[in-house]
Length: 472
Image 1 (cartoon, one colour):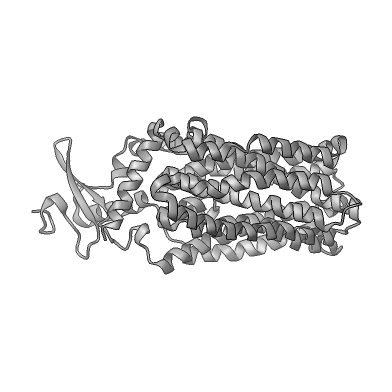
Image 2 (tube, one colour):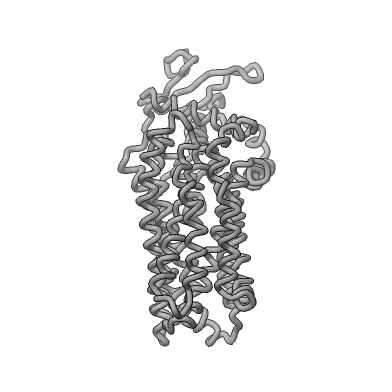
């Protein structure tokens, strides 16, 4: 009998505080603390209200970050005037802003898998996809991930729209573009403290184990994560956590090809963000407020992409039993055509002889494809890498944001030497080269992952957790 009058093979705290399993280790009984099926503290069994509260809180920060990045470029003119800097120097500010998105997740995303998600939201929010993967099962993950993708991608147009009219006011300019971001970020901090909860299972069970050791005076209660080799060596733990994203990026073909595709698309997108204003001003005589309004095309494309992603979920539910994770890729195959079509159309219709609405339609088409791709990359990697979704996403985020950092730095020189038409035609041709990626993954993705021990073990552990939850 255990210390609570229950057979030691499955001891439980009063009130179903946890389920435990006894194993033998070093000639001593160790009681591992796990969740019972249906335990309300298991993130997968949170109430719908709690899940949606956490999801919306996480998505709000994504909106703040995305609007801030796109709004920055709209203040270039007043920044050059006030700071007496060049166009390249002003653009460098945007690139350095984006490079933070590339580097920080390398540490925060995997560290959140070891130390928890909640506290990292207090200082940053690079773990949104991991949070969604924690609390939503794969069959229910589509809508939350669609909302996250919509928050990120549509806000690029929203930030430019608002910033364009702030920049148009000579009394405000680039400083007030930044002040608006600061004000909303401060308000968001309160939301994190009040509504965000820990969602990482390994962290919650470790907290329960510490509580049970303190209350019982017995050191037998352990979380499985506490007995890993990494947990015993803090330096090794930090090293493994911080390099896991790079490990996945360099060793997992699925992460590599999806990262390359979204990275190139993101680089083109930020080239467009940097060039839309000067191109529309030079070709159509738009003022800075008008060009800010033109960015609504990006938001409109995101809206179309959002509804397309809902149809993708219908296809996923219909075909997931037969295709598994690859059932996430149906609309990615459509997006593979939308991206080059949008870029080619923008390249060949953006001239003074064509009405200004036509190139904006081209931007909408491109953004629809970019939204679908962004959504698919996140939800597909989350399904493929389960508990390590944050690390897989951080790996693609590194490459994606590195290209988004670099592309705007050479865009002005490239457009000057090649003209907008031929530079964007080059982008369209490269998009055509990448067109087969979703088709290859759709037909061979499962076989590719089976050759990876890491991917295979991760999926087995994730499937066991889902099956245990389904027993409720």
